[in-house]
Amino acid sequence: MVSVLYNDESHNINYIIYSIMKQLPLEKYHDLALLLLRIGVGVVFIVAGWGKLTGIEGVQGFFGDLGIPLAGMMAWVVAIVEFVGGLMVLTGLYAKIPNLLLAVIMVVALFTTKLGGEFSAARVDILLLLMTLALAILGSGKYSLNSMLGKEDV
Image (tube, rainbow, N blue to C red; front, side, top):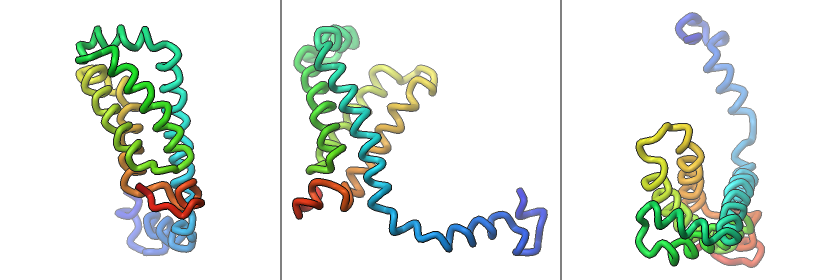
């Protein structure tokens, strides 16, 4: 580690990075960061949901092969939650509940299709799970429909 090599604080890489970061007003970009996160999560789920809606028979068969109870109905539930939930996350309209529902979908996906496999197969699902939970906790921010309509983030 560089900090071990230099005792002089002015040469310590951690000190230099900290000094630079302290001067940047990053906290004022909190709402922009939430918007970027919402765009990423929302678009991914809109596309995934649309794919399921337009290929529902294949999704029903896949869910049946996985042993998911009520596979036909659950395929519709997942497809609708992903598509509509993705739209709600993207726009920031009452997005906490859809984010929690999308997180549940990611947990089920991880346990039914990714558990026991290689990490590379699960990493996107893990990231989506963590991002939806973060958005459920943090809310949609000021660049959202909720904020524009003067609504509380629910």
